[in-house]
Image (cartoon, rainbow, N blue to C red; front, side, top):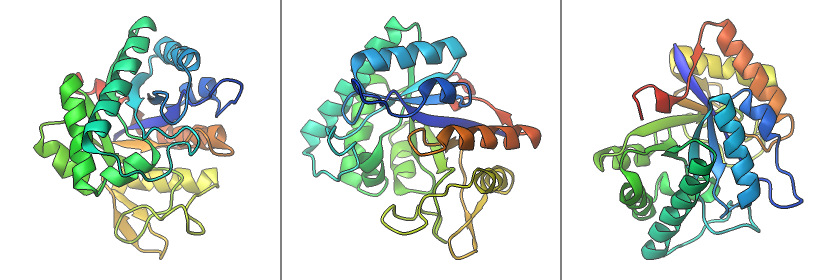
Length: 256
């Protein structure tokens, strides 16, 4: 049994601090680093990349809609030409900073509203896929497990990494419960760890109605910006390791 743990990092902006990157980088195996569109500033992003490189953590581009005020969580109907160009721009910017930090971008994980939109919106999904291929078709794409995006990206020739969320509730269909609904975000580290261990072992997660929803995932996201994030991530890592689950970045498994 083997799994990757990823977290959204590099999201502090100026005097505003988001999460504890240093602590999370001691726990996760992959870091989704902000590219400045939803969060992050150049100096902070560079510092996060250097810290990831020092710890052997693989880094990916956490691309987003241009939405600093809304933290990238507001839906946007972006024209294809603008969306393609903005994703290329973000990946390129992170690639430059990563090179300066002695590391490189190995994958792309869309953030927030963009992530949720392209999971089901074929037009915007194909725009993001086209942007990744235009920069480097060897970059992997992290996508919501079980979503149509997985098939669209694979059909376009991209390596897809299916992702589950440690601290999110699931519907019986294996999709995420909307953040607008009560109980959508889980807060008990022990419960979260047990759920993810079951997912790794059996390929299922307990849904909100008590049924078991099938979820196949190559990576588990532990959010770095929620209260108690570090404690939750540490409990998850400890539980998985004690159960004999190996933790390793997905990008390193096949030379990606």
